[in-house]
Image 1: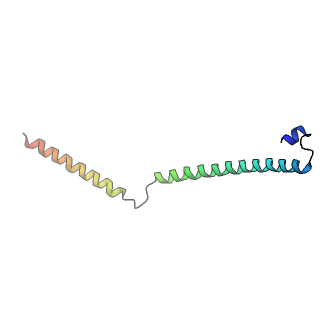
Image 2 (image 1 turned 135 degrees about the vertical axis):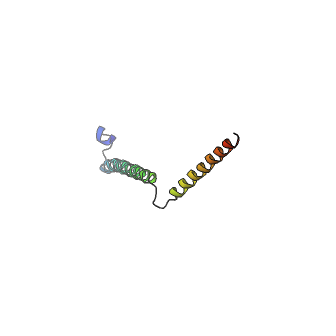
Image 3 (image 1 turned 90 degrees about the vertical axis):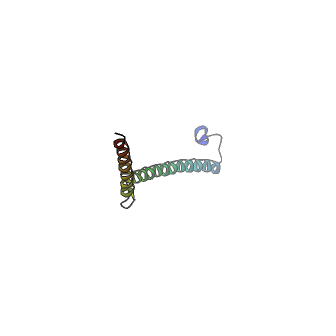
Length: 86
């Protein structure tokens, strides 16, 4: 860019072309990196949405049933202890 702005610094056409090509490459790399970041963010958000869903055979139902049963037994023990004191 400096060669294009001043014009007298780089009279050599090879240097002018090289500098302009480097600038074009830098701009292209910038946009490619931005696009890759955009894709990664979308992929990450999709993965997070999928992870909030439970798989069909995740064992969630069995674990929930076990916790509820344990809670029920614990409450029954307290009721039995409380009623035996009267």
